[in-house]
Every structure is written in C-alpha cells, then in structure tokens.
Length: 112
Image (cartoon, rainbow, N blue to C red; front, side, top):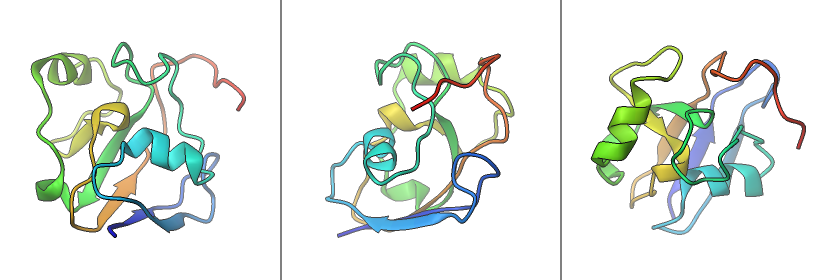
C-alpha cells in the first residue's frame, strides 16, 4: 500500500502525518479520514481550490489532472508546477509526499 507523508503545516497538521492508503484512493478524502483536515469547501466536487496542495514526491504515480482541475488551479493561491487539487487526485502505487500551502482563497477557515 502506498504511504502518504504530509509535511508539517502550522495550523492544519503541526507535526506532519504519515499513513498508508489503498491504491486508487482519493487524496483529499484520505487526508481528512486520517486527521489532516484540509479544507474542502465544495465537498470534493472540483468547484473551488481550498484543497489545493503541492505534491513534493511521487507526482508521476498520480492520475493526470483533467482540464477542469487545471482551469481551477489557475485560481489557487501560490500555484506551482507541482500543484494539485487533492479532491481530484487519485493515489497510485508509489509513496507520495504532500505539502499544504500556507493560505487558501478562503477568507475564513471552516471548522471541522
């Protein structure tokens, strides 16, 4: 099973996290299920960018972003070449490392 490593984030995951998931799992849902409460204002429907993250390792094993995701990513804060919407990311066979950006486009964070 692939391992997901989440780098420390000041408010969402101060100590970082590490967990295993099934191949084919959705990244955003896996993060939330494992206590990393990444924002997902649109409830995983690819309608916002609050679940934006950076894939710092293992990007090649993930599904390719579709046109809708790529269009939305243009609106994300701090867009980089390794940016993905975690709600649209399907985990492949390899381990991945995830960094959650410091900010999102939300003015206020929703409590989970």
